[in-house]
Image 1 (spheres, rainbow, N blue to C red):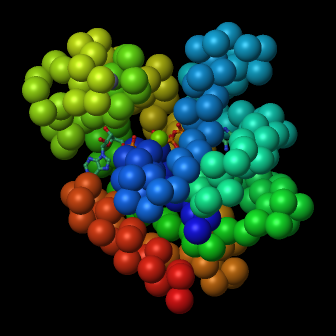
Image 2 (cartoon, rainbow, N blue to C red):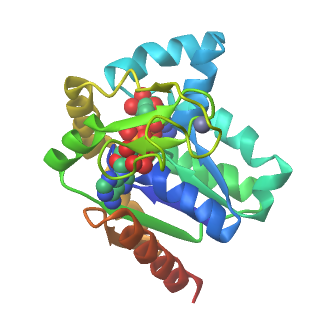
Image 3 (cartoon, rainbow, N blue to C red):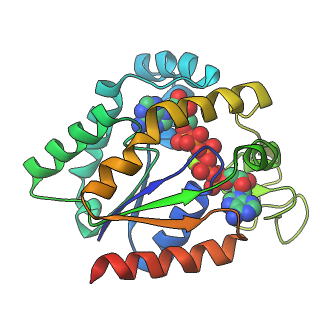
Length: 218
Ligand code: AP5
Ligand code: MG
Ligand code: ZN
């Protein structure tokens, strides 16, 4: 099954994609993570992307869609994937449809995680991740089992994202409403859109998403 998780910054796309990766054996493809890796490796594309990401602006459609298209050609993606952070505007949605059609693939289900802007600014303020393995946490809603120690790798260094300052988060929310939200209508018209309540707790959202996906399967 091929899924898109749609939703504003902090809605829980990454958190829920990791759940689905474990529960459904799907591959999690996050364009944000791919771009952050490219920036960390200081590739020309990565350095260019970082300037835009740090301001909360979108990176070029062509750069992003080329990365996604290449990643979809890898063998593991053929068993089903979750797109997190892409498409981000109507142009990318068309480019994705074309790329998938060329590969003989299609999207089966789009899940919109609906959440409230003000709560998201606060929620993102509590996010941090393991500096070694990247596992994501939250100060209040998803803490490591042992304080200061990563559950996954035992690492003790943590980091916060450069684009998680309140001003940048507000800009990212503005960009979401202007450019990404029109995709709700785009996928509604295709009859593959489901909505879940992103303000519920993490486990409740996970069960809502599982039911939504079952609904798409029918
Ligand atoms: P990207 O990395 O995609 O960021 P985003 O869309 O802004 O979303 P986030 O990763 O901030 O939030 P999330 O929904 O994954 O939430 P999370 O699960 O972490 O993109 C970053 C930048 O890259 C963009 O601004 C752009 O510049 C560029 N980019 C990426 N893709 C692009 C594209 N296609 N085209 C052009 N540019 C692109 O959860 C947030 C926190 O809340 C965590 O701490 C988590 O533990 C906690 N949490 C999660 N769910 C809940 C819950 N239900 N209750 C309480 N806490 C929760
Ligand atoms: Mg994310
Ligand atoms: Zn770790």
